[in-house]
Image (tube, rainbow, N blue to C red; front, side, top):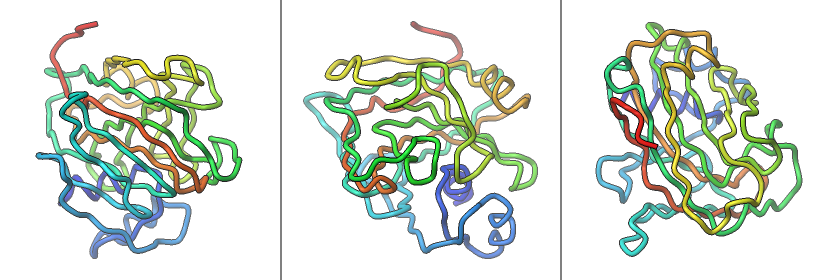
Length: 226
């Protein structure tokens, strides 16, 4: 599906493209392509894109959330939304983590070797041409303060934005909402008309570590709630 290819292009991971997208993907990626897989996820309405082994996602009925457990793995849940940005510009979600990401090897978050996060939420805009696809990753950083942002180390088509930082808030739920129209303008200098997809990912493959979290999955809304 196109929206899965969009997520692959902006998730900040090397991947194998389906012909005839291979040439376009080569423009987006800074590393050689490797085989990847898209599979149905255990969460209804969401697909799973596997970059490097599977992060385990499951519905936690007691906590009313989707639990993610990564062990030297990286896969994400993605959902096509095709929403008119001016009508539903507000992205809302919540997450909780009991412990920070436990890296098996230390590396700076802004580097490829350190590009793992206990929680990520993506919002994806599809450009007219495939290489114009852009994304914003809202992340829980282990190094940088809230408000920090930088280009993803694998592709400059995605910007990392820190919305939570450090060990503060472990063990409790945190709700977020962002006006993605304003954020695409701020971080990509881009006025968007449509939101193509949203996604989440807990990953620990680059640092060869472990991470776990629970998500109340992202959704789009017409107005702010918090």
